[in-house]
Image 1 (cartoon, rainbow, N blue to C red):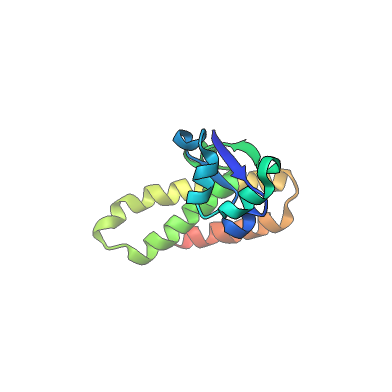
Image 2 (image 1 turned 45 degrees about the vertical axis):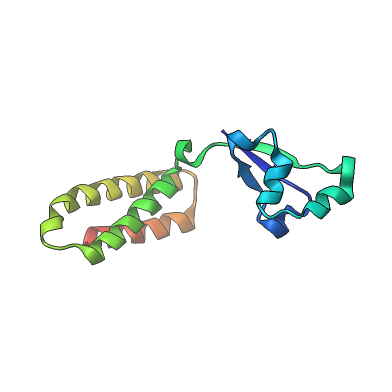
Length: 131
């Protein structure tokens, strides 16, 4: 899990941000190194506070079906414009995976009544099938 820090008015300085594990004990020094003004820390003195929370690491986060399908569609769009005859060997496999992911999203969106999402992914599926 990533520990996120959000100091007062942190949005002005690029916060909230995850704190590296090795810097959690000296987080005020780290804040200043990351561009947060020392003056704001000094002005609040003992009343200086930060909000903290934990979020899953990006590398360990499980993608939703929508994110998974979107990522595959984008990957396929970029591949379709770069394919040479030699690299078409792996294309059928990628296309099958993308269609499977889109079908998952369509099933989920239909089951939960996400009409706009359903229509959009039906168009995406048709686009993939044409490739």
